[in-house]
Image 1 (cartoon, protein in one colour):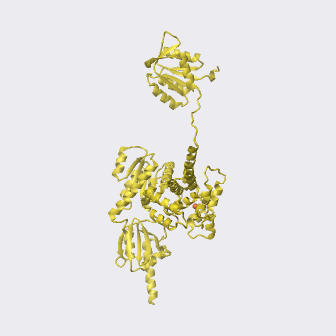
Image 2 (spheres, rainbow, N blue to C red):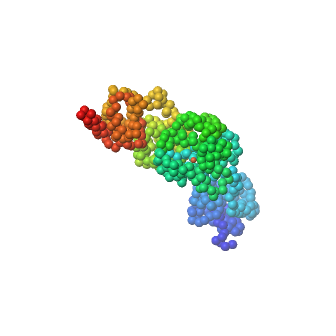
Image 3 (cartoon, rainbow, N blue to C red):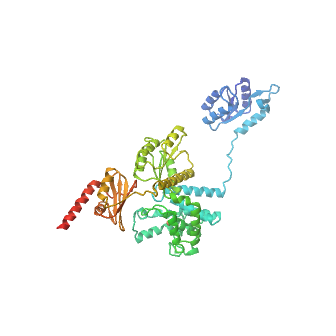
Length: 570
Ligand SMILES: [Fe+2]
């Protein structure tokens, strides 16, 4: 045989005569042998040439056979390694070898056979994949991909997954066949895919929609089906997607189907989709509680929704998803410098119904915590620059944010930092990689406990400082909050009239009264002589309608009032 084609076998043995005997056996069997007296020598040979098989005794001078096998595998995964108890040659026969401690005697032909068998190309054993496994794999892939499409959307992150979970639970509670449950799962993941064809400004930014805008939104059912048209799904999902906005009374779209004409999957999706939307923050309104959303569903039974589906879904929410009600749309900040892990955390927490903001550095995390009210911060200990521990330490010294609950994530199980974190008041210290379901459950428990604590401490959540404007006028309130660099919401009430002024670090950031905003609203409010005020500390807003300095605005307001009074006097 051509030398280049011969398989290379390395014999590793501390005993010279045995080594040589084995080498000559290998050579006569058609292999290309090499020899090494120690593990280190063997490693050198494996590093410098492609060895197909190593035959080593189990006790070498430097390594054990098992240790040598591990090292060789690290250098060359393809090399096969056979570890055999010590060899000794039985002198009475040239052909027979004795395998040491176990006293196992093997014919030299058997040894060659063993080596030949070890070197045979083996195709990896693969079990046939079942249809069910393939379907599950496809569904899970869709779930992840749709989640990633939504993950950076401030309003729709996690929406499809949450809707799917509700729809799946209803289908299971109805004891539908597995195939139909899968159909509903897939349709609910893909149901709004047609919104890709609707302009973002219509979906998110516009408050008042024209007839054209509405027609464009309504087109998303047919759009969705058109996008998926060429895919031959093993489920009948297209009718569900097409009809998920039909109404039970026949006044829906696109076809005006009525009652049981509407596919069951679409009737389920219609109910759970409405519930998921109501319990999430949307561009022009805040989330409502599970109870309020269920009430709304019940109010529209028979007109918009299928009564049976609503009844079953109510039971599902109460039994299976009641844990979500207290913490629905809880706001969580996640900080990690491993961007892929950060995205994964965001995706999984959004799928659990949390509103999630993320950043990859400690400095920004601290700014975000100061600017926005978070229900929980989840921070990696080892972020560069300002570490997780630094962020926690600074938070604890700032009365505005000292009570934000905190979970640490860490790649290393270090007792010292764990103890320090717990001393600083961290709620939990979890080792990466964390189980996402467990993290979500822990987060939920912490937020629930924290909101209960706030309730018992204060009697009710954030009662604020309450007073009469006749005793403390708006001018005094502005000056006090300005001097104290406070972040707070001041609500003024006079009969049915309500106005809100947001302060951030002592500066007025947003002011709203009736249709008025910013400075104009503020000048009007300065005129109030009667009414009540409530000051709630730590409440923030994202809106900014005031740009002028607060004190300057106060002076300007007072000047205008003087002017008006003078005009009236003339
Ligand atoms: Fe839709």
